[in-house]
Length: 426
Ligand code: KE4
Image (cartoon, rainbow, N blue to C red; front, side, top):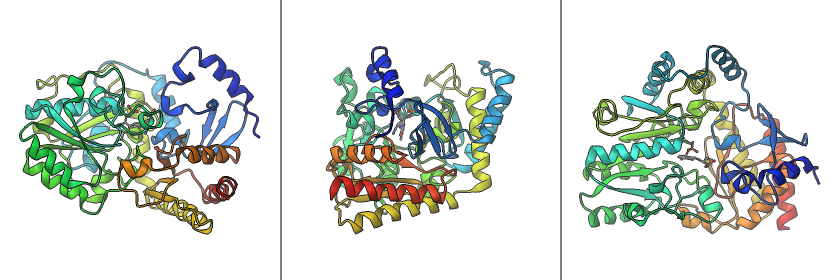
């Protein structure tokens, strides 16, 4: 067994100071989380000095891996010039132009400091622009921890059994209508039942927060057609998929153009960020040019934009081909182990996203994902930790590769899956 005694000591102090000893519930796991002291490339080290190949990658932002030299350099340079001015900076223009270049659906963008803010404000904008109050959300999707979206929410809300959080007035959640992923007929019925009341439909074009679930062929296209016909704004929440599936995200990958897009994670290169954007006609309704208010102290801050710009420039330089090849390699490797052991488990993922669901497929929606044996997943998670492989600690999250992961990392990881799956299932 690995020595993780210092993590335990820190946890014993932390749990008296912070709920669950963590700053976000997704990081908590039994008997105690590992406290991380360093990351470099594809690796992280805990405070006891144990080394892990990291597939959490901070839940998605670190597409270049930890402490990429080009990101570290620009952060050092910027810090010397100050970290925050509360005034416009040239980097906002540079990053906004880069985003507009890769997302033709985005004519104007507003920077914020988290994906939660991005979706919260995008939904307010959709309501302000359409004058309608209801929004359609996909069961099991996660769009950040704000009231309107904590309804059958995925990610940590499902992991910790609060997909419908306490503390949210029914007056709020009555405006959030639910539909399963990959189910157009239910959306059609909702639209028919709530004619002219629906401002927007928000969707993770590839669900990342139930574990990765892919859209059926033409599902996104059908959503686009239906929402266009009904005057409903289609919002693609690309906080995970943006710049990961392609520079232009899922909308480039699947060739479907939403009305509004939310971004986060990768676009900040490991620093706090969010962004939402769309046509000038809609975005100009955002204060100060319009009557939909939005604001934030750290929005568009120099450090986040410096890291984001450096990250996108490096992604432009190296492209996604190698990254996606490695994603395919790790999915195929784990699939071959599952098949060799005759396990009724399902490998899911796309590009540099992957997950092993402890249930048989196909996995088309949240209900399918919830069939997974979460207790067995936790045994897999702990077994992999012992073998130096660190995953997000939940069946309902996505594992991420970075450009720093090597073929050797992937071989070691597939071997670790093989050993642990033999231990826990045979
Ligand atoms: P943040 O507020 O965590 O930056 O973004 C919220 C958000 C919005 N949309 C999507 C599709 C997301 O995946 C997220 C956040 N993802 C989670 C993990 N799946 C972040 C980790 C956490 O909650 O601590």
